[in-house]
Image (cartoon, rainbow, N blue to C red; front, side):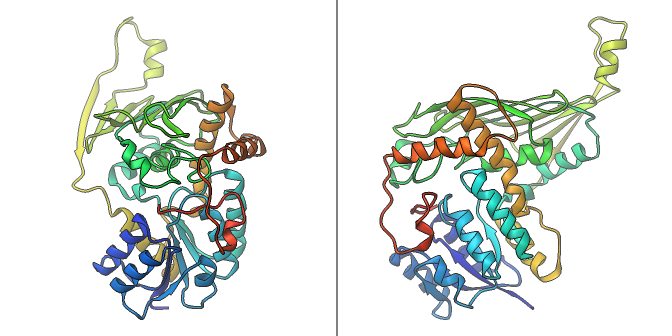
Length: 390
């Protein structure tokens, strides 16, 4: 194969963005040969931009079985991701999905099992993994430059949204339509990066406010505490209701710390071990000497283009994926644990009771203000599926 024939399923903001990158010539060795959306107007508008040679379909099932594509890019609302991906794998297609991997780990676990059996390439659009600052920090953690981790803190409150944003689609910020709020819509990238760099915590405690700042039924304010296997603590704070917001990621270790904020990477290198100095130092107030280094990266990485090109390169040349799809369950596990903790009021061990989480989610879906429209799509039979533009 000289190129990959790609079908895009979902023509909302993200699907349209990928088409824009394609038309601008930023995507390599790929041809968009098919598109799909349940909205005829969006389908017609995208078709006009791409040309009549690109096939159009009203449902994902039709596109997947058309023979027109080698791979699909899923850019639908969250609940659809596992269902469509599984259909793609079972029909011999490679799959790249937008984040999150799904709404609940039970469905994502099934998706991962089908993906691994299929032997096809499975990627997830964790575009923030292309950011050189986060790549640098991951390298430092993996190679032990910071020593044993003692604390990780991410304050990510620059997601400010008005009520008009939530009113723009009836499915938004509902349990039936979106499956969650700031944790599932805005924060999957940060939750993924935190586990990618620091690992998955062994337990989580979270307090969440549901509709604190907006007239919505899902969370718009969350404060969560992580506990890692070595006893290190983590803190994750997020909201869509504060302005101005903060985006600060800080990781401390026995040998130093790193702070990423305002596009700047600051590394504090200790002259020795904090632990050894704490127990063996003669001066009760004596810290270690510390060197400070600031690194300014000239860009934030290739983002969506980088992930898509990497996905295509993996299909054609076997290049390792930067964001393997099966890893999506890790961040979702942390996110689900936060929800479960907020719902039950206690610590949640990881792994947690997936059936218990799913049962509570189903109860919330049944009383959700969003009612799904009727559809001929087979994927809509499950309660996990809904409609709207991502």
